[in-house]
Image (cartoon, rainbow, N blue to C red):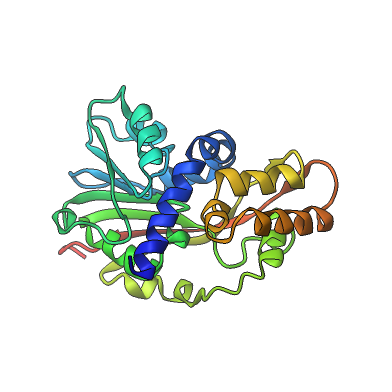
Length: 262
């Protein structure tokens, strides 16, 4: 297995192990950003609504009543995330959920979709600018896309900032500056930082959620339990005691695909 394939496999396994915990811990806390993303999708042409990196598909509860009778399709790499998403979708006749790599959509979606919506998936992908270009390419003329993601600096202080500090996360995030440039024929309708309050019972509770039910799971699989235990100790030692409330901001990018009338 090549290194990229191994990394992809580990990512999928990590989210498989995290899926139930993610649904319980993070989905309720991320709900305000999901609501903001759905509300940012205004009038759209005919066609399906596509949700790449759908996870357990919390967007569905808002998309279904907003776009009644529409086909809504979720795609996620993790089999366990797809299982939970299908449970959520089981009561709705026009919803499908597929397991697959949302970083590059199947060509069959090209130019067919009324809208594309993705919340907190983009920053996890290996080539975000290429992914968002692929998602935009799925839109029909006049279609709309809203993508919400955690930027390089989601907060100056707080649980997220401290985690980046103890991880010494210096990943190349230059792709953020090129996102809009990757979208030819796009009318940018909104490009802003959106913040909401988030509460964690304690620093340890947040770290454990990130480890067992979030983005650290793949890292734990790669580096092992000893590494994570040492990281946790550093984190808790540097964090404040008691309940932790913060206001992280995510970038919300909403665009429309040009039509001939434009």
